[in-house]
Length: 113
Picture (tube, rainbow, N blue to C red):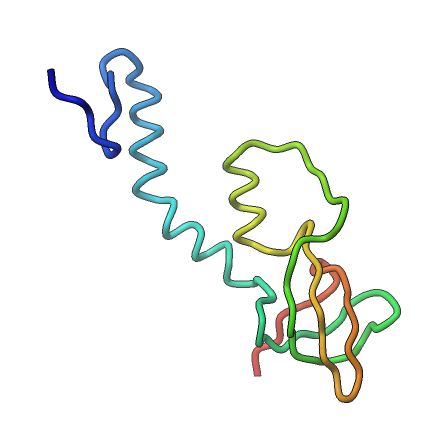
């Protein structure tokens, strides 16, 4: 008996809908994650703070990481998309002129200049 590889579903005839969903995710997920991650305020990006104490300031992101105590109940796919997007449940460290501060990633906007 041949063992299925990781690229194959064990019993595609047993669950044809699941097999179709698996194929769709495998084919479209890499491109989808790239599209979702376009607005991610990653390290080295220039951002503008939109809300809060530092609203209106422009700076460069020097740190991007998870926000403490963030919890959202979502599917595995939703969690993967949230992490690829890097906005909800994340904070960024911004260096603006001579000061450094941390803000929620949802309060900044990536600036292309």
